[in-house]
Image 1 (cartoon, rainbow, N blue to C red):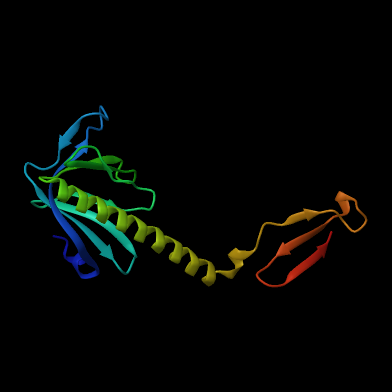
Image 2: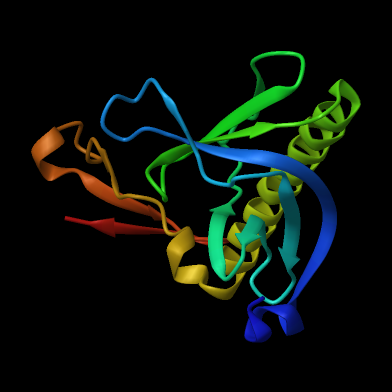
Length: 167
């Protein structure tokens, strides 16, 4: 498949399905992306804390979709589901042979979406801790000691101390 990605990405769930993409011209009709059912896998990249759905048909990537917290997988019939990928500028559709397979995929999508949300929050927390200067709040304008707005003081809210500067 992709030798460099195999080392850092681990498959966490796979299913077989017929893959479709929405017709970019009409945004209404489904175009088959595979002639027959292919393996569709969820992968986790621990080094980048990223979840992806990947499907390969022959030597071509049919699906390469990074899961984000704002994505939603929608079951549109008993054996068909879809999700929009704004990064790839498409909507993917999957046709399963059983309702149970569709449900398992939908459940996995929900779990991965939640894990992506938690990973994003954790990553944001680490970023903020590593960059304390980002914790400086926007300056607030207060009335000065004389009650006049033009002679006001500016308060900068730092992580612990509050410093007051007189204008």
